[in-house]
Length: 217
Image 1 (cartoon, rainbow, N blue to C red):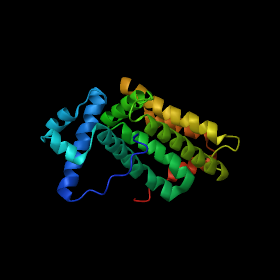
Image 2 (cartoon, helix red, strand yellow):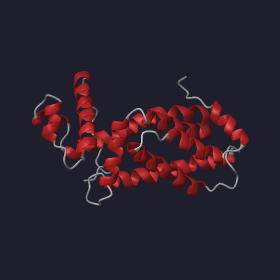
Image 3 (tube, one colour):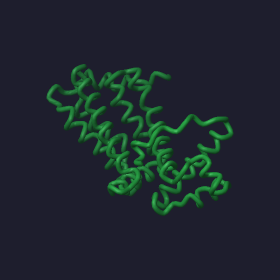
Image 4 (cartoon, rainbow, N blue to C red):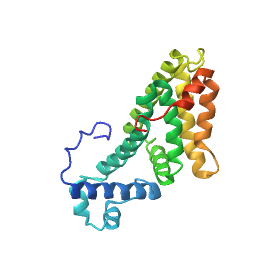
């Protein structure tokens, strides 16, 4: 069963159990980033968490289930930082949220390394996260194109911008920058994304972009 089709696990119980589960996910994230999914072992992750292999398997049925939890945690963190901008400022807030997310990502190199390494490994059709990344990229391109189309309709982006093509360019830029940044930390990922978006913006769009703030501020 692929990660993309695995049924959702039942809600976990008490605070202590949730805290233990979160600690396992953090350690697995670190080891997957350092060693890759294939080389990291349940035994090593359990030892780092000071529990037995059987204890870890009480929370996660296998390494694939642990990988799923790691990826879900990354996506949940991204949504938590991104959604308030979209909620407060609509389509232009979505674009501002992309820049803010890139700025945050520069503070968490381990997560960037994890994402780049796993997404590269998952290019192989027999990798357990292959379908997950296929669906993830398709979803991100689709929702980005929708946000760009809405921004064009709002007069915030140039009327001759093709949303589908721009979405492919923008998402490819974001992914490529993460790899380049791991090799050269002087690269300003957020600045590069902001620059591309600014080239596409109208003057009202630039003003709305700079004025966008998340709904929780």
